[in-house]
Image 1 (cartoon, helix red, strand yellow):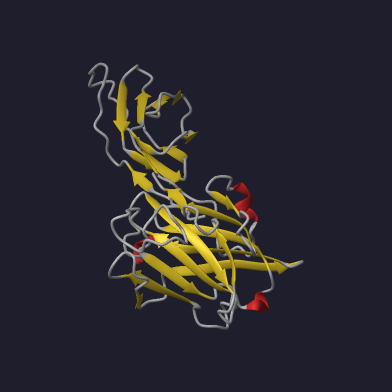
Image 2: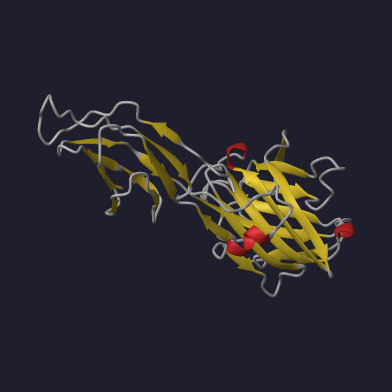
Length: 289
């Protein structure tokens, strides 16, 4: 999971007192927030107050001194703390919180169990799936994560081609009967399942150029656009995970992309399967958050 912690310290907040009394000053509102996904922890160090009321900006509230609140959805919220002194003088302080999409996927945990929590953005292989069984996708602000299941052995050296309509526009990119529903700007190609610790990064990135009906791609430099996580092979089934860096791939900056994957034998002699099925629309991954 790409955990994002955001600390905001309100060292001085303008007080709005219900009544002004020099002998009964308003509380000095001071608090910090920590954002972790949808959960926000409020640490209240206000002085001069004996009671508190939090308005979380989403229609809910709390009278705890330092509450933990889970927001139901992504977006911008303005929480406000109302702090009241023993004399009944109230001061308030507000801030802005932005809750954004995070992913539970961690590539460095030597496990694929985190993918069990992903129930959306999944493709189950069809009649033309061949070696493919399943693909899943998830995302956050920086990366698109992918998970695959297929039959075979790691020693097969399968070559993968991932077609990406990175701008989700039919006006640019390759038009092909392999995957309909899009025009493919980017092609990633290579042996994804090679031992990552002992072999060079086995994927290359190509950008489409020329006429939309021409299979013409230019290879791009750089190898940091993707990385692999856990790869598991048992009982003739391979399971694997990886991620694509959205900032490193041309046009990969919008709210939706289309993806399709082809598997070919290591000697290029046989197409082993496609997901989705060949001739079907590529998978549309919406990323609105």
